[in-house]
Length: 338
Ligand code: EPU
Image 1 (cartoon, rainbow, N blue to C red):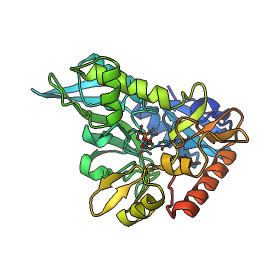
Image 2: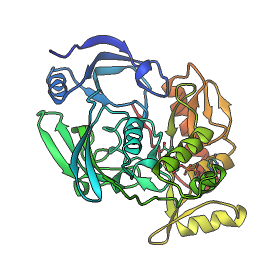
Image 3: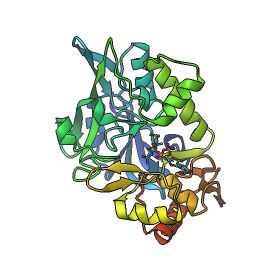
């Protein structure tokens, strides 16, 4: 069946920030063949979206928006201690996590409840509570936008970093991720409880010997307590990355703010939580027009209803400026501005 391309479509249902802009042309694809056909429709430019959970639309979108809805989860290979799972790019990330936990496959539980789709996950190497996609990643298949050809990318070829990959850098706009292969543990799992919040939550849940389902439940509980549900308040999770700086910058901040949190990195570098920096600048819980910094996690910018993308972007510019002024640290956005 040829793909059905619609004109002048509202993107409101397709972005978790809840921004009401329009796409000149829009289609949903369910297979590689449909993706190829959509790419070859001759309409340019093309923007492929997954769950729309890392996008801030600041204006109407010219050209063709393609919603990737290639959805399957397939057990590809069974090894003694692991299994390889192939997943279509259109699958919701949390659907995959739930499926894995239900099938006693380990490795994804710390990344429970991350919004977005499997196809979008490698673009920014999603992560939470001490685990990143790259820790379970085997390979992915991506379609070249200009030729429709499929290429397989190994772990190394993806160039993963903190919220970063080649698909955000040198290959930006050149490939569309159609499926991802992950390697999950079974029957025994290696839990990652390094993140203080998880062990504390497991204690309050009364669990002494946690399994992957318990960790997943703990993570869901933590996320629900801190992060707004996009179904109720529009948002894209963390709006900024946690900045990396020289140790000297941290030591200087520590003189006036001894409580500053930080995570050590190699080579005398440290990561400082952006949420803390933003809170110190007085933005936490502050409402500016229809937008603001969330009261329970300053790093999350929200749409209280009817905000425009430009309004949110302006707020983020002001936040960047004030963190720069107060701490001399340049915050970088994690969210993609369109
Ligand atoms: N903090 C504040 N004020 C705030 C928020 C945080 O002082 O308003 C401090 C906390 O006290 C804590 C530290 O910042 O000491 C870290 O906070 P949290 O545990 O909430 O994590 P985060 O560093 O703010 C990162 C990820 C999240 C991920 C969590 C857990 C980034 C940009 N964000 O947030 O990812 O869920 O760690 O691993 O790395 C996302 O990327 O969308 C996302 C939600």
